[in-house]
Length: 289
Image (tube, rainbow, N blue to C red; front, side):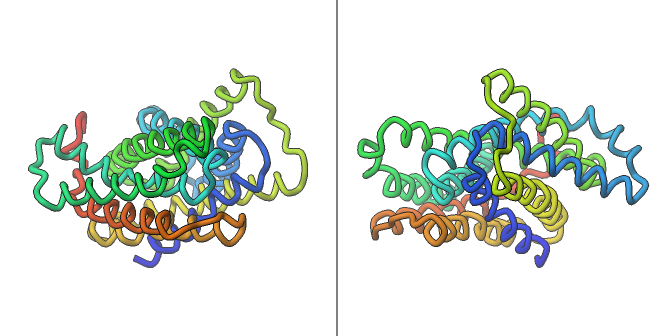
């Protein structure tokens, strides 16, 4: 559980680094994947396992597709609504995974599933509802990007679990996914006419920290920790990420909060946790596994 908790703490700073970099969403996603991927390749080379990366690359395309959608949406949400809310919305993935289990795998939802949906959606409404009209179009798009992040995030986690189960190598799997995603995010930035320039040391330090610490260190810790704890405990521990991201938003960026918004965040997180208690699909249960 220690590696899982530490990984959640590390990636809770990801949204902070995206905010402090001062560059576009697509550029920050590209540099996150680039620096993280290069670091992972270096680790594989140091272990004499570069050959494993070549064998994993073709099988990692599906997970990379979902991770690309995740980061392109999430980085836009961060810049539009702030690190805390964007991370909380992205972590609706736990509820989306439960929905996937019910709709695709035919699992019986039960009372807990209904309670999770009510709490999560009610919490999101309390958090974003009062600001929906006041925040304007940018805020509204940011919220929608956050929800889309949750969908892509859920699909990525399921794909990652299946890939690691097939390859038995978390480092090579995450490295391959990261490299594919770097290429896709770079292409998206190029097509959108975005700049790749890192204008100052703040941007460089933020992107290096985002790639090396969060993408490489944080996700490797989480990937290795997921198999060592039961699903319910993993769901609870991973809630450290949105909780801490919301706290960093208040402490570092002076995010104004009120009792209604805080109540909404608390309800949403409770719903996300209950959603994470829904039985997680095993690799053999997934389509194509």
